[in-house]
Image 1 (cartoon, one colour):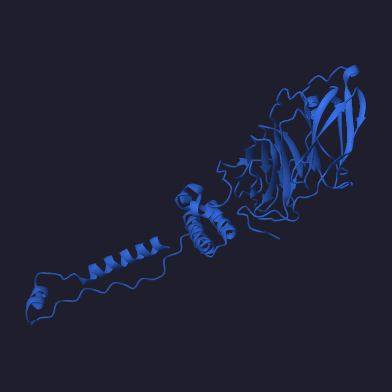
Image 2: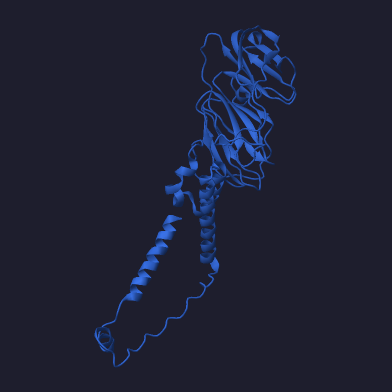
Length: 348
């Protein structure tokens, strides 16, 4: 705003200066230095400035887009000045979509302050006819079967089945995670994978996904509206920015732990990512049930967590050859309701 006023003042000053200059020579000099016996011939009047002609075609469209971007920037700055950081960021990000991020990079910092680090890599195109993702995903044994990893010999295989309960009760529709680590503390790290969490019908799918440390997740948008995926979780804070239907950005999860996802435009949207270092893991189904079918017998440390828990629980178990059963309990102590926006502001 200040720069625009400065330019306008400079133009006005230049105009005023040129209008005050006196012409020298002839009758004009005589009139200026003494009595005028002959009036100087007045300069022809300049035509009054009319409205700028409307420009059509690509140039006109570009000019209109830039005017819209300028209007968005002014509204963004007004929102920021009033303390509404979330609205300011949305307006500024919309202006960026028009101009490109490079054009506004010099003034972006005040609008991003207090938000997770922004991912600015170019978006990737996606096939919008791709099938829906499942509601939950993540099984080390399913990965091993797909990768044709040999199972232990049948005579030495143990299985484990059970139900994850919350505060001592079954919790249908609440998803969770079970992991197993050999008590020795020694195992081969799992190979990172590339998986998908989509945005479709204004919800994330899967609602919970478990991946090994180092895995990359793509976040495609299948909706006709823009989305803004973000996380403020300490182990993986990120902000993917705005992008439209048929585009995606990715993020690589390098640390073990739990990540809560949100959309900064739609408070109802949330999902969870479990980044796992354990060699064996599985997410629960709609009834809280879980199963491992190809475990080597021995002592393990079991960790369990649900999307309604703040922290996982740990217990020691022994897997014997053949069938093993176990129900596991966790706390439902996580805050209910929508996640805060990416600046920490309360929503909903």
